[in-house]
Image 1: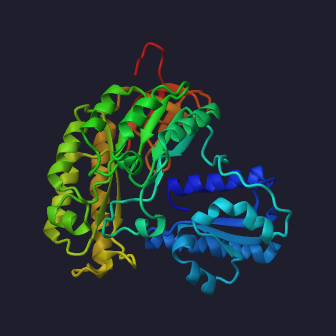
Image 2: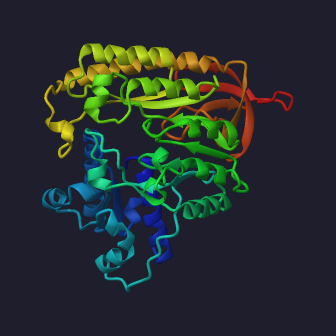
Image 3: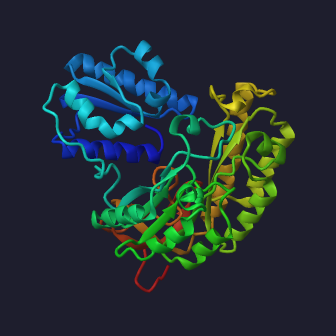
Length: 420
């Protein structure tokens, strides 16, 4: 459940189990163990995770399998889960996941086996892989529970990141997607300063790697060095996920975002020196104290900036976070209505941005028959490119765009003469 960071945890858990002699089965009815990897970020994610646990519990009642719960919800609400979900046989916090083999061996009364945390059982298509640079976060935004769940920033040493990148490429990945709670702050805890740009430069030298995509760069740590990297590192796609959350100075201060609207406008202008640069962002509406004027300012910024991709969340008060006790809490119906207004506007913006590509040619990574992704499309969260013509999955092809809607592009395979 949840984000790509959690997906990588799941891949490591499965990798450890496979090395210990376990087997992954496709049908839950055939499993000896049902393992639910949960998300605990905001209320809808928690509800979705609980629903998945209950569904697994129904399978357990029919088959007698053991039910194991891991992930962020398990880390944050272990006591509540134990009290309210007696069908769960085992709950493991995030640090305990590394010993998942030992826990499952005991649960199944199996002979103890060695546990290795170095491998991954990939859950993404073979040609795309997530590469996690760090865990935890030091930003301490007032609405966010991640530091309560994941703890402070803990970066992976650069040599280990590069070694994993090489392994992923050897395993077939042509695209590597860099993730962390804040990729732009990567390395500060180890090296005394962010080391994202040197890492990007080193990834350029990884033989066989075609695309490097960057997600989750907090605007407080995105800087001119990163702008330069997009110009000078050819494998780094001109695509950035820059979660602004808001543009109103007052709202940003109350959120504890460590960056104000003026700086974010400067960043947008720098990245958009390349008019085709793809900017993705996330906004949070209905934060305590957000006046209608603050919200209108955000709408105006979205209109003028024309983010290629934008996700919106209505604010949810998370227990244990400073924002949950702030005055000026906004009714849920207002929060949801504001989120709907943002998405209605973004559909218009996205359609305009997509139509700019009609008549032009894009390089596309083929995902399935007639479907691929361009540099503008991260898996799951963005659109796709539908095209006519035959191409192999995992192949990079050129597609000439002939039509667009607010989310996707439509085209046909280009001839060799039609360059990107």
